[in-house]
Amino acid sequence: MAETPFWETKTLAEMTPREWESICDGCAKCCLHKFIDDESEERSVYEVDGSEVIHDGEQVHFTNIVCELLNTKTCSCTDYANRTTLVPECVQLTKDNLEQIYYMPPSCSYRRLQEGRGLPSWHPLLNGNKKSAMHKAGMSVRGKTVSEADVYLDDFQQYIALWPLEDVD
Ligand code: SF4
Ligand code: SF4
Image (cartoon, rainbow, N blue to C red; front, side, top):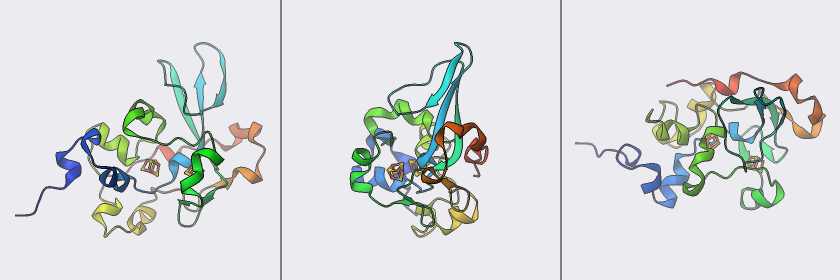
C-alpha cells in the first residue's frame, strides 16, 4: 500500500523545513504587486508590504506587474537568498506569519492546505517535481506579466488583473 504523503498527514505547522519549502509550487503569483482596497474607510489603495493583516471590508487586488528580480520564464527568483533585503516588501511566508496567507492567491499551495483544499493535480510534487503541468494549467505567471521596471507604479489601476485569482484543482 502506498504511503500517505506528508501534506495529507501533517499540518503546515508540523512540517519540517524541507517539507515546508517543497509545498511552494513556484507559481510566482506572490511576486506580483498587490494592493488593498478599503472602501469602507475611504482609504486610498496602497501597496501591500506584508506588515498588515486584512480586515473586514478590505480586498486584495492583484496586478500583472511583477517584481523585477523574477525570471519570468522559469518563474523563479534570481536572488532568492537576498530577496527580503533587496525587496523589503517581498513577503516570505513562514510558520510564524501564517496570518499573512490571505495575501496569497487562492491557488497558492500553502493557502490551499491551510484551507483544507489539498494540493492541486498540477502541483510539482505530483508531477515529478516539474513545473510544466502548472504552466500548462495556466497557474503560474509565465507569459502574463509586465516588469515593475517598465511601468509607472502609480498607474497600477491600469494593471489590475483577475487571472491571479483563478484556481484549478
Ligand atoms: S503563491 Fe504560494 S505557492 Fe505560489 S510561489 Fe508564492 S508562496 Fe509559492
Ligand atoms: S524578491 Fe524574488 S521572491 Fe521576492 S517578490 Fe521579488 S522575485 Fe519574488
